[in-house]
Length: 234
Picture 1 (spheres, rainbow, N blue to C red):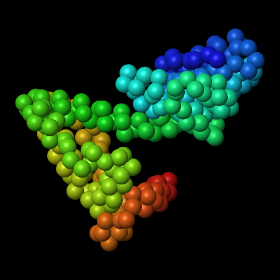
Picture 2: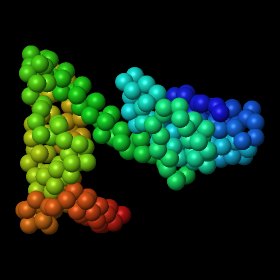
Picture 3: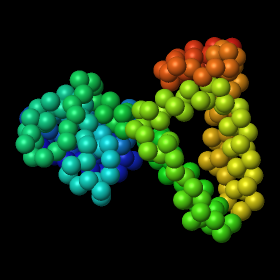
Picture 4: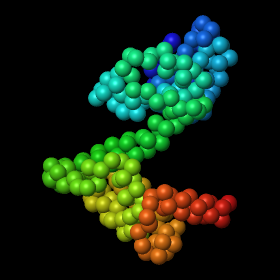
């Protein structure tokens, strides 16, 4: 097996360089969080050379978990690669899906996790300039910070169906406060735009100003109504 742990920007270039050097049946294990199209192109290059491409999504932090960090695998070599390293202590999930799907899962997950990182920087830098960084950090605790993420996502979606506009307004005010501290409020403004767009879909009226029973119901309504908006704009 060959592990490719190069940066995402050169993932496809590495696959192209390595493919002619692979022996028949060698697993090419690509850990890079590269665009899905690059993963698919890399898989084609490895297959043409007789190799077995394995797309890997790393769902955690290696610095924290070491080799026990959860790994999700997809692609033509996923199953056989999983069998090769079984018993070595890795936490593996094998998807019955084409190359790129493991990375797709990782990247969708990172919308929240890496987006959260950016918001923490924005919030804490502004708080520092107001002399409130410790107090602000201590204040971010409560039921929403202790529940499993599926429950948190469900709670947030159900609340936004009724309160998206009010929360968008608060985020606009947040942006003004952050900007006044000399910090560019990119995250606050973008978040306000997202929630404002949700509010304009009319979910509050659609649910008769009542909190929906599930986040799935809210997502379905957003999907349907945003599709109508896009159709009108086209």
